Amino acid sequence: MLAAYPQVPTGYDLGVGCAVHSYDGKLCFGLIADAHAAPDVDRLRDFLVLAFQELRRSTAMKKARREGRSAGVGTMQ
Image: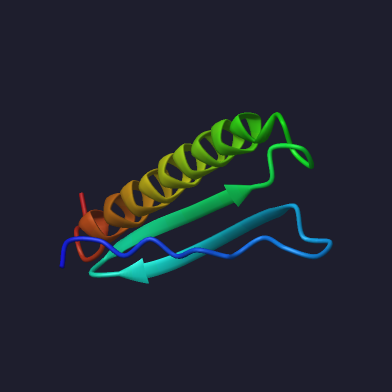
C-alpha cells in the first residue's frame, strides 16, 4: 500500500467532511463535500494546500536552525 486516503461521509446536516490520516511518514487528506452545501469547496482544498506548504517551510527552517546550533557546539575559536 502506497497511501491511505480517509473519507468522512456527508449526510444529515454535514455538508463538508475533512479528514487527515498519517501513514508511512505521510499525511493523506480526504476532502468530500455536498455540491449544494459547499459549491466552492475547491477553495478549501487550495487553502489546505497552502497551509500545509507553510507548515513544511516552517518546520524546515526550525530544523535548519537546530542543526546550525548543534554544529557550533563544542567548538571554540
